[in-house]
Length: 469
Image (cartoon, rainbow, N blue to C red):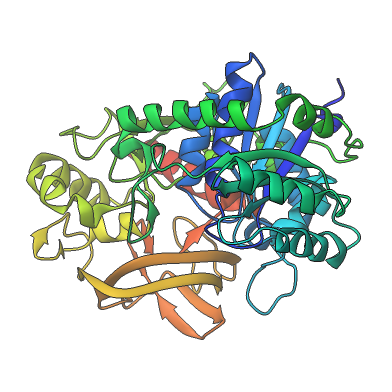
């Protein structure tokens, strides 16, 4: 099969809370259990749902965000992630037509579905309606003729009689019902202040939840019809995204090696993981490796030292505030991180990583790399941002423009150092984060696939440090 013709479906909903994650994850698991290789994807910047997708399929959950990465990269990133798969399932975000604030359809589920030329299956919360469901579906099906709304899955159905009424109403809509799921809280996934609890924090329970979702979907959905629908897609003309090719311009600018000189060793970049640092895009590690790094994961909750010969450090997002006592208790690792930062080695820290490098979180001592203290608040900071690097640093050259995403309920005092990490330009103008030595620390989550030079610069900085050590 040509990679551009990979069978694919987008699982959407009229609004948040309708059950997209329940249905999408259940479908992924059900098809994987049937022996298909399933590629999981998520519209938008969300890090948590892809963890459940990965558990259901055994493949990395990947994000498709047209705001962060640009519309032109969506199909290439999809084809890269779906390589070798029999079926790709894409879970939407919010309501089908809800995009980046004030930017029309940009980054909406509908926008991504059109970029992928994929049929949409609408998950409808039917719990408080019967005949009206047909009017709702008709409105969504007719709103944008370029969006192919090809089926409906009725969720939270109350009884056999309720399902009968819903199906009768849908008969006249022209959109087929491809499944009906009863109300059932047994496969529920617990939530907290930033959404679902990540898989890494409840793996055993998550495995049970995903298995139950798969069983519900098998019982309530027409898997054969869904697979047949997924196979009706046209070929995508795009080439798959290639991290090595993305880094080629920077590589070509490097000086040619001296004849007969020994090949430089790969610099080792340690990447924080484990339950406290679960927010990461799969493409980041791929870009680091393509730039010439050896990527070594470690768990700040468990490991008392950085991986041997660490020459650079990446600490992504997550929930350090939930694990502050345990992170603080691991004093040997906190000291090792502080020592690495003091050496001038490149350190990239986003959100949770920013807090971990601070002096304290809610009074619990952290690494003390940054002259700032963090605390939990009742205020959610959420939204897309545009930013520019104000000066050269280990991650970005001065003038580098990025799009990012903020998502936290913590506050840092002060919020910026004497040398800020970014100057935010939209939707508000302010400075944010810290640049000190080789450290670049910020609340802003950035998808490196949109700006591969970040990975290349970090690896080259680590390699230079190793060469002069």
